[in-house]
Image (cartoon, rainbow, N blue to C red; front, side, top):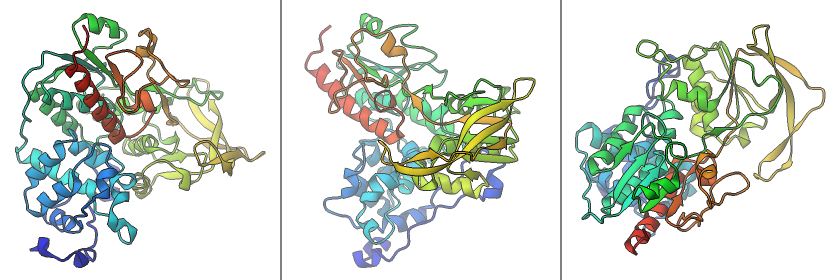
Amino acid sequence: MIEKIEKKERMKIKRAEMPAQKPEDRVRNFNEVPFGLTAEQAITEAARCLECKKAPCIDGCPVEVDIPGFINLILEKDFAGAARKIKQTNSLPAVCGRVCPQEEQCEIKCVLAKKFKPVAIGHLERFVADYERENNLVQIPAVAAPTGKKVAIVGSGPAGLTVAGDLIKLGHDVTVFEALHKPGGVLVYGIPEFRLPKNIVQAECDVLKDTGVKFENSTVIGKMETIDELFEMGFDAIFIGTGAGLPNFMGIPGEQLIGIYSANEYLTRSNLMRAFDENDYDTPIIRGKNVAVLGGGNTAMDAVRTSKRLGADHSYIVYRRSEAEMPARAEEIHHAMEEGIEFHMLTTPIKFIGDDQGRVVQMECLNMELGPPDDSGRRRPVPIEGSNFIMDVDLVVVAIGNSSNPLIQSTTPGLETNRWGNITVNPDTMQTSRPGVYAGGDIVTGGATVILAAGAGKKAARAIHTYLSNGAPK
């Protein structure tokens, strides 16, 4: 049996390569790109784990998953048990197994990574979560006796869903208020189907519903009800997880032209509103032939790969630094290159040019060179004088980051924010300046990762439970 292999022999096992659609096939569809590991591959990959006593991989996990514990269950072929082990601390394993940057968190801490490739923790997490769901083995978690305390969660992204999952199991009455018509937040409006199928997000939300969480969709807190009004409605504590939904623009001439989208709008139209499915949905979206996506993060990769699938002849990434400075995951950059995305590095737009109908047709750019590091630690891009050139474009997607949604802050007296408009919290408890009000995720940090938002939700859930258990004032 493979689990009997000595540790020295385990280090000789090659890391499993996840099978995936061929690039020439996947650019013509929105189906998920990786197929996932087979059971045989998962068992072999699990055998690479050295079962470290101190398990540094756990230290790298923001939601404290018992990584050696669930991997050991894979070796025992108890795949559903492995999924349940993960769910003891992470309510969203099928999501996190797909979109979290394990290479920067748990996997980078793996002892094997010092000399070999780390254990494919994310691939194994995805495998067991999918196995449990696809074989109808999902169990509704046990719930403690009702505490009589009510918690309102504003926003159903990864932070809000994590808080909901943790608090419902502790016996609290939990209601999630979501502004959009479906729960999931950035998981449904921001991440494309080919990276995160929406039926998986819905399945995770359905488990929360079956556990007792109530969802109120199409409800904009801060507009329909304020935070103070939620307290008046009988809620004992409130968690704010409204994300970073305010898109940033460059502020250059021509940015108001038709054919210039924020990444938020472009991806929301395609993902949540399913504009890519012309047969069943009539959501309008511009399908450019020469598409420029500005930025170098995961959102930019999502947008440019979407444009290719929507029929672009040329899909460009236009980024003002070099590839070494790009914040996108290496896997996403690799997939984009495989799909024929054209990268214009050390390039920045300075003006958009329109036709007589007000539609963007060209983009004036400058070449850049890298100077000394800036506050981010990356080398600062410096324009090269006189290097102006013109690119022909008929669609531009601006993916240079987002700011925090300002609605809650503007309607909640006494809620402190920082100079960027993010809500200020105690980093240990996620408590805001208002008693009984907690916050986490991108509304606190600015744009970050799904797993960091979930980690903030876990901290907040613990603190809220302590607050309610100590007799929250009415």
